[in-house]
Length: 120
Image (tube, rainbow, N blue to C red; front, side):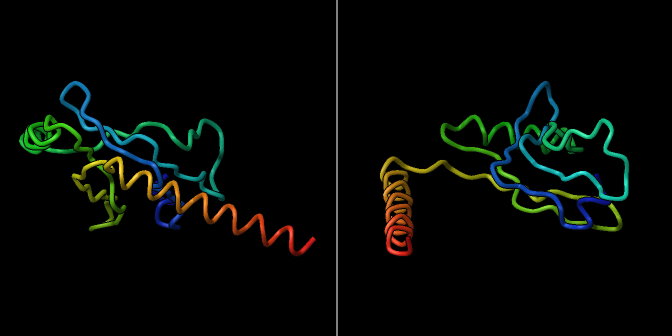
């Protein structure tokens, strides 16, 4: 998986972190199988345990107990040959923001449909 991450074949789209039994896990990160390696037993979206000090987990747990906060992975990078994940603490969208983004998506969908009708 690390070689695949070095080749920038990891996708954090829709990924999130959760604390389970005093351990931090990363869910939903897709890591493509390494092309030169064997594909046997590779699960692209398995949960991955993140190595974090207990103090940091307790600090994050305190912040996550506030309603509406989520722990989101921002980027994967390498430092001294070790893969690291930068995490961010964020709030979910408000109802108005969500409606606005849905409206934008529908507008794009309608525009694409109009272009398809015009072509064909």
